[in-house]
Structure formats: structure tokens, C-alpha cells
Length: 311
Image (cartoon, rainbow, N blue to C red):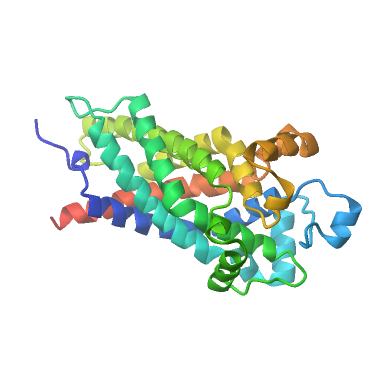
């Protein structure tokens, strides 16, 4: 049986570089939605004193919703204010996408049956492994820095002048542990994210490949890949949102003063803000993951397609 071009296994170099390119493009395009989501998650129910004076030295603003975050940020910091922390996320997203696709492709290849097929649970296992690795290597430090940069902007006198300056201060004051804050929740979130997202995408893409093959189309069109990635993003948002909220809270500037650990954070969030607080920021995150899922998977497949053309 002739091997279809799309079934050819990418090399480690191809997986890493295609993933990094796709991740960098996706992060740059969708970053404002990540900024809005983070701002909404960082605010809790605060007293009038906290609102006036700030908690733990951090000035607080209460936003009424995603549009209010955009309006207030643009009014006070200009349009570029919506890109505060972008550098950290682009570096992190490019790195994590490279790690994610490399590990996922390698584990998935190892779990294939004799016909080259991977069942749903095995694909989820491959995604879980990819998520854990990307959380440890790339996601935790870069998202911790990004969260602190965004929160610092809410202070009347921001301390961090940019990515490098902020990172130096964080490490000087808190050590390396300062950029690995909330690592447990990040591993849980990324593991769940990748398990759900990559498994959903992989299973839908396999069916799409079979569908287009019957129609005589050599490979899945880019628009179909975008749609499959977007659907995978929607599924991921609503199944993993509570972990994302806890991750953001555990990476806040004042997290060490407010929470003993991730479990304490979950309990306090429930008691102080209610169950729906665990889905706070879902709308901007949904906006981001719909587009990011479409963008990152489409870019990844297109880069691999270019590689195959030049082989």
C-alpha cells in the first residue's frame, strides 16, 4: 500500500521547527485576547479598602468584562498596552509548540498499532506526555513572567520596564523558584490541554484525511485544518478552564502571600468568588483558542508540507 504524504512521519527537526514557527505566529496574532483573559482572572472580589489602596502593594482595578479591559487599557496605556508581556508569551509559545509537537509525534509513533493507527486513548496519552514536558521546559517560566508583567501594569508605579528587566527583578527577589511559581497547576493545565486538544485534533484530522482521500484529494485543505483546529480549541476551553484560572492566580505577584498551595487557592477562590469564578476569562480564552487552534495546526501542517516538497 502506498504511503500517503500526510502519513509520513516528520523528523525531530521538522517537528520542532514547524511547531516553533506555528507557535510564534499564533501567539503574536492572538495575544490581546490572552492579555484580557489574564486581567479578568487576576481580579477577585475586593473590598473598598483594597480597591482604594491595593492588596500587597498592587493597585487593583475592577473590570466589568472583556470590553472594559480593552477600553481601560487603551485609554491608560494606549493600544500597545494590550501587548504588555507579549515577548514572554511569544518566546514561551514558540518553545512550547516546538516541544509539544516533537514529544507528541514521537509518543504517538511509539503507540501506533500494526496498521499505523492510534486509538483515542493512546492519542490522549501522547498529548498528556507532550503537555507535561512543555509545562516544565517552557510554559511555567514564560507564563509566570507574562502574568507578573501584566499585573505590574495595574500598579500606579509599575516596577518592570520590560521582559528582561522584569525577569531580573523576579529572579533577584525570589530566585529561580520565582519564575516556576504555580508549576503544579501549569503541569495539570498543560497536560489536560494537550491531552484534549491534540487528541481531538488528531482524531478529527484522521477522519478528514479519509474523507478527502475518497474524494480524490491528496491532502486535507488548509481551510479544513483550520476548522478542525478551531473545534479542538472550543472543546479544550470548556474542559480545562478551571485549571487555567488556578494557574493564573498561582502566578500572580501576591500569590505567595495569599495562597499556601494550589489546593488552598482552589478552596479560597470557591469560597470568595463562587463556582463560576473557575470559568472567569472563558470568553477571551475561547476567542484565542478558536483562532490559535486553527492558526497553529494550519501553520504546522503547512510548514511540514513545505519540508516534504523539498525532500
